[in-house]
Image (tube, rainbow, N blue to C red; front, top):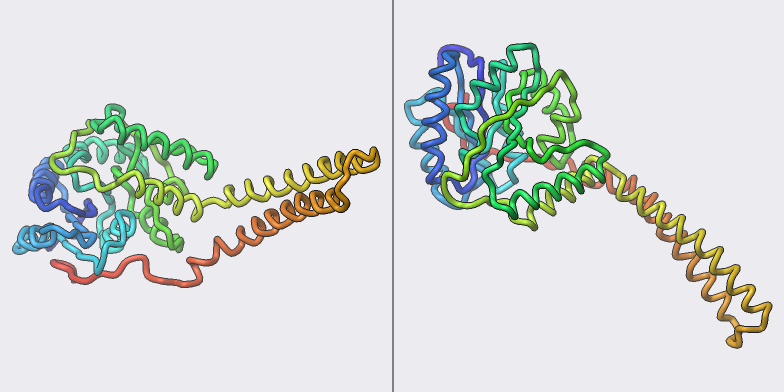
Length: 311
């Protein structure tokens, strides 16, 4: 590749053996219409099928196609970060590999970016997903938004075009748990969204099961927000206050000679009061421990095994 790319298209690949050739072909067709130097960066998240073999075959003799293979399955968002680390374009497009994000929509996103925006996100107002997928996505956005005190739009995912300075800022975020849309929301810059056409899956089925979505939500919430721990602290304080009320009640019962078992009052009051104190203490401690635990291990978020067309 002789010219420095203006546009870099980054896509994580997983279980896409039957899709990746069409993905590359449609991106290339779109980039011919745009008429700018470009590069395609595919990141194989250690897919168990023949995705990597397909990527290798497509990359041979095609200097515009850069392929990376991770040493194990790190997950979609670490795979995105791996691709972003190698992107050289002034503008970077991030998209999924399943062709539900349609490459032809890159033209609309880039044209909007030229109006002066640093981030242009793709809004999928008419999602071609199953009812359960749309329902789980909506629940994810509601729960995530509540616990992180942010506005998370389930019609917007990874697909979008981002200025190089946005991506550079994202890559400086040292959080061990990676969640690309969260980082985009965090760094700021001048952003907008436009409606794009969303397609049904080209083949196969989504690899995001309900359990994986729950795990993603949990990890992202813990990484970004300490609100769950604050809720536990408040819960502990409420229990402590209730213990005083319950204690006063049982003291009244004791003075009124309505309690015949000696020591009952002191045991009940102690259990309620100490339980509240313990929960509060654990919550406060957890706020600090939970934030530093993963960070202090300082493990790499991804490890690259093989590369093609990358110097």
